[in-house]
Amino acid sequence: MSLQIFDFVIYGKDDQPKLIVEVKIKQEPTLNWAAQIHAMYGFGLLNSPFFLLALPQVFYLWKNPEKFSDNLIEPTYRIDPKPLLKPYFDKSGVSPNEISGSSFELIMFFWLNEVLLGITKENEVNFKNQDWLFDSGLVDAIRGGEVKA
Image (cartoon, rainbow, N blue to C red):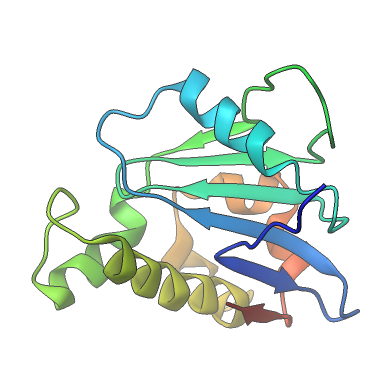
């Protein structure tokens, strides 16, 4: 098996990988395509409880993803990231349909850091309508951790 390189790995306070993030640009991604990407990365090399496939128009999140499965596994969550990422796109002056891969990676880096460091009981209102962050256990897993590119 070859070593996989991920766009981001988020480590928890315990220095263990908690979230693997792969950033892609693709027009009209399907669930089947997302499941193929998930299977392709296989990410058993890092024992992470979460895998996020991030695209400008949709996030796919797997919780406790099966490792090295021959079966295509649909994501646990399908998320509309537009409300989350709108401030970043507004500041950059680029639309989600026009953004390059490297620019979207930069937006994701800033957003991940905001989630990682910015969610506290006092400002959880900023993440209103993003129940998946909390319901999935992702916030608790990564809070106080570190993003590594």
